[in-house]
Length: 290
Image (tube, rainbow, N blue to C red; front, side):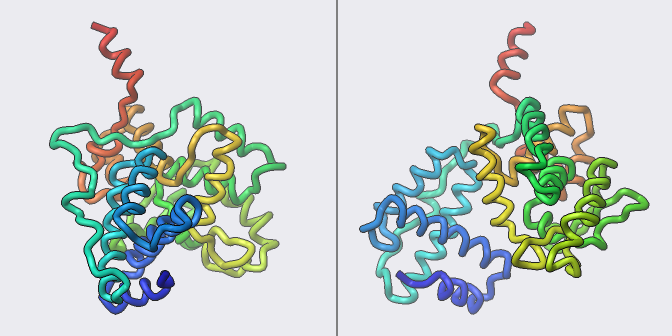
């Protein structure tokens, strides 16, 4: 099995951006972890192992867009293996293997219900289980809708305590400002005064530091959320918070254009398609009004 480091180097020579390389490599690592756990004797990439992995992703409830992204990553990996002579055939064909959604179909997203939000907020108040930094992670994800990459990339200078604004540098270097609630700002102050000041990386420019690095890695955020998901008995993923942020704003009557700007979407249509979540129960309640 070729090391993913070789794959990363190949992507670099192909001119791929750093974020794209990281995304491809992480997707391939996820595939390899599945092979290691479930299919120990199966070659690095085969039609059989790919189909089983795709079925696994569907069964686990991953969003269609996420599954299709992983399929794209594995197709690029397939190309890499062919280039290196490890494979002599194209295992994955995007036109055939990507999950198709009929035109006009609803795009569904995973968002936390109000009950789940309340349960989570009560849970993170337990100081014996949750550090101030991790409470801040939840608050920032829930009340700003930032992507996990934007979260871990936040620097102290991005926060204006006088105007209560967070400057976010999003995809393609696009900048946007998001207002910060006072309880979020206070938690930032508490974290900086307490845990962060005692860290080995208290000198870091980044807001969120870890025990091993001057800024957290997004995988550390994902891993912690996955860990507490087991205690809460519902699934948590960084992007769920983004969906929840947009959905809650829309349900509270905030106009689509404002939500789109806060989320950093390229256009309002993206917001309308992916972040207006209507649950089955809400649909049933609507019909019962007739």
